[in-house]
Length: 194
Image (cartoon, rainbow, N blue to C red; front, side):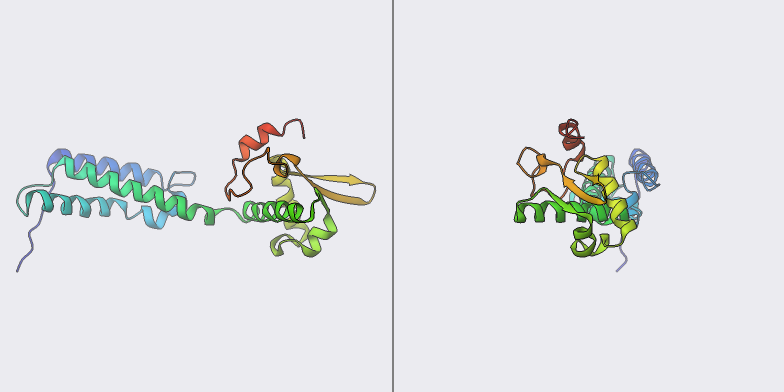
C-alpha cells in the first residue's frame, strides 16, 4: 500500500512559510522561544504534519492541504510552544537569578517560621541554601534581591544583616505561595522601604 503524498495550496504554503519564519525568528537570544529552542525548532515540521492530519480528517487523502488546516495547525502548535515555554522557562534562569530566587524563598520561609525579619550574613552563609553559601554567590543573589526591593544588606560596624522587606512578611506584598512573584509590582510597593 502506498500512502498518498499531500501538497499545500499556494495560500496555505505561504502561511506555513510565514509562520515558520516567525517562529525561527523567535529562537534567537531574547526571542520568545530562546529558552526552548530544541522544541520550537521542530514547530514548522509539526505544523505541516498536523495540517496534513486535519486535512485527512476533513477531506480524506484527496486534494491539497488548505489554508484553514494550516491556520488551525499553527494555532495548536503555537499553544503548545507557549505551554512548553511556561513549563521549562523556570529552569532556564541564569545561575545568579536562580540563586536569588532560592535565597528569597529561604529568607521568607525562615523569617515566618522564626518570627524575625532579618538574619546575620554569617547565619545565611553557614546555614542558608547550599547555592549561596559561597560569599560571591551570596552577594550576587543579595544584589538581585536588593534591586527588586525584596531584601537589603544593613551594616552596623562589623555586624552585617540581611533585612527582608516587611511587605513580604505582613501579607501586603505578593503572595507567599507564588513561586514566580511579580517582582515589578512588589518593587513599586516597596519604594518607601528602599
